[in-house]
Length: 83
Image 1 (tube, rainbow, N blue to C red):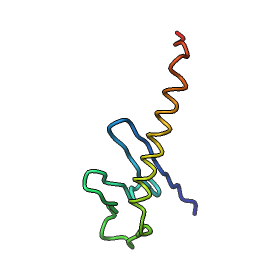
Image 2 (spheres, helix red, strand yellow):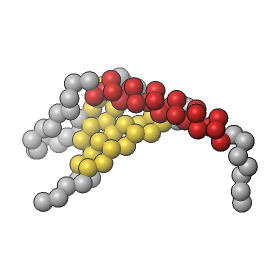
Image 3 (spheres, rainbow, N blue to C red):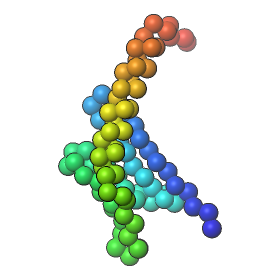
Image 4 (cartoon, rainbow, N blue to C red):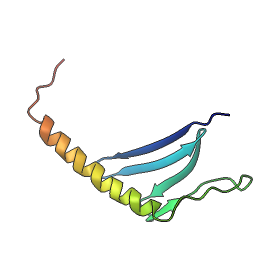
């Protein structure tokens, strides 16, 4: 059958998120507070592990996200707001 996978990567000046899910179930997320990747899978399934370096890639993705956020803010600062 078909499966639905989802990847979320987002950031703000002070926070960030990176998460992967499969069929609506969270499979992996970056815990930026404890500096590690978490695989919150229940014990009754065959455990799926993500490649070594996934957390480090998530940290790098956050740096890219914040850089892009800064660039977009600078590019849009002189655009007038419309009602």
